[in-house]
Length: 409
Image (cartoon, rainbow, N blue to C red; front, side, top):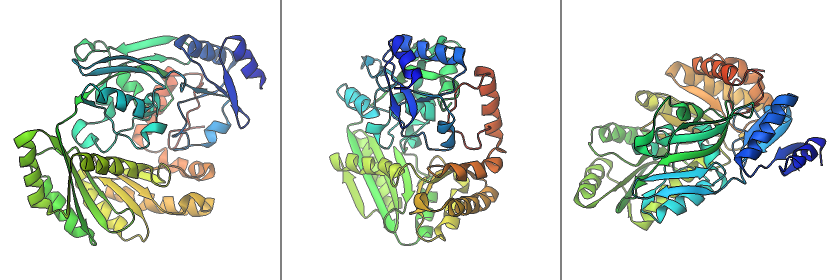
């Protein structure tokens, strides 16, 4: 055991070695505070994490430069669930599967519907700002966070918002923390707004060998009044497929299904449990081959041009959320390719996507690849804003989050 873990053990905090890196495993708010106070006093560089599924998203070399990993995975209690209000409060270490199963008993659906919910903690999902395909209807995850309790870099406990929809007052710092990727705080607890689980679920699928026909149907789908739960275009394992997931009740739901069926002319219409299974498989595409090699963010109006460009690349797996302007790119074998090949491929994507108005974010590639691409990615305006926020909240650069593309040294 390392000297640091022995010192933390004297404070009552258990830990373990991950490779040669010490990881603290606090079980309470007080223990997280104790860890960060020690880190702040001793100048230790800390990587906040849950189960660690997203640590290699962007700059994995920052893990090696850290002194201590701090995981909230043992803080996994559901604190409050109020079915009548449609709210849930839970500790950051709860898995999304745990929360989904709990709120289902009260007739609710948990948002976001992320891939690999059993390997994703609430704190990790919120810190990553991760939304699922249900963002098409529900909106981004930050819209559903009612309040948070966090620990700041110096060990100070802070809270923002509340546990009830009508009890959210003051500055929306909980929304600032959502998507901060472990650079501003460690999330301890969060309260979420829930949605009633609909009575009826339908999943429609249209498959075509050529992309243009499906893009034309997408144009028509945009004119409909119905609001899909998810609307995804993908080509995993074969031809292009357009998925439209709908939920609702009774006559209104059936009218939505007829409208989509008229435009989509689907080969498959799945209902009830089969529709739920199809939706789960759809969100699982985000985890195929890992967390994906890259994603591109753009406006929905530019998706057609981007997808036509990507269609020309043989063997590329694409998952496009047509209602929110997100495209995930997975090139089979790229994870195992040489660093030079990874840089070449990602730089080619960046150069082709940028003129079309898309921003590329590499994921799950080698540290050297990320480092070489960082100068070009760091020029993005949003990243400069994030860096300035971190300078304000964490002036000693104590948090060494690996999750920003183009991260400054």
